[in-house]
Amino acid sequence: MADDVDLLKGMCLDVVMEQLFRVNKVLNLTSAPTKEAFFGFSCGEVRTLYFQKRDRSGAGFYFCLHDGRVFDAAGRIHESDPALYEGTLYDERAEEGMLH
Image (cartoon, rainbow, N blue to C red; front, side):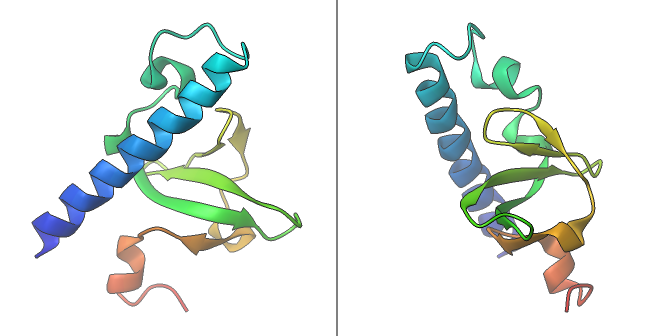
């Protein structure tokens, strides 16, 4: 079961990253040749995907990496404190009872 979840998570993150990269490419906001070059990481490095930053009114995508760094949909780094974010795609800490 866990392997299926990891596979699904990876597939979802790959699609999200690819679509965000393509939008930035079409808008001429990047000359990066790949989504990995654009973001500076691969989908396998992502621990969870947040959908909103608590101090902002709008939704967004915030990629939290296994090393704790957080990047937005444009590849910009953000604060790494998990308390600043809400709405996750998947976070193994929830399964371990570490989130409240």
